Image 1 (cartoon, rainbow, N blue to C red):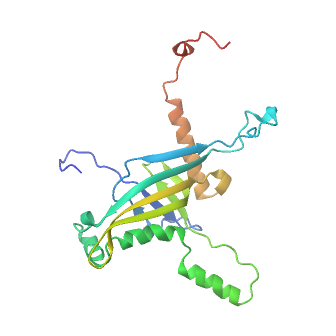
Image 2 (cartoon, rainbow, N blue to C red; image 1 turned 180 degrees about the vertical axis):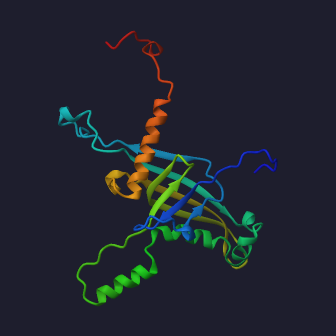
Image 3 (spheres, one colour; image 1 turned 90 degrees about the horizontal axis):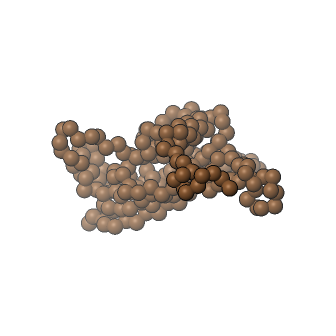
Length: 221
């Protein structure tokens, strides 16, 4: 980052978990990426009614929002964190284990949830409802706050201290954007998805468009 006082402040990307009941931000589990990834890969899978080719009357109809998936690779390095007083002791003791653990616990039920379900099984309950995780938001600028489910997660630890604590790692994340098809319209997640979709529509309306002449046409044959 530039040391010049007039240089713009670079925003960070991150992951924000919300309480599934109250929608309150779980600040102790919020993750701000140490370095922004150099690239963000996005894939959109169209949900078309006529995709099987058997019903021609459905060829132009959409069943719902496109299924959007995201992939990124983030880096975590203890060197910069050692310069921060609030991180110094933790990094000295366990390297970047704490940062990795924050990411990893996003895809685990809590130990308390596991123990509670085990106790309910032991008491004879026949049906145990799957454990509810926080609503996870991927934040990539103020205009892209997306409800997501983490679908892929891999960690490559690249360097270690003398106690074998990791001090540098690369984390690959795959995420699926959750739409109103997944979350409905009434909850916090559905509202955030609709805001994201409306922003897409606003940006599309600002696009330059084109003319048939640019394509070498005077009209559609």
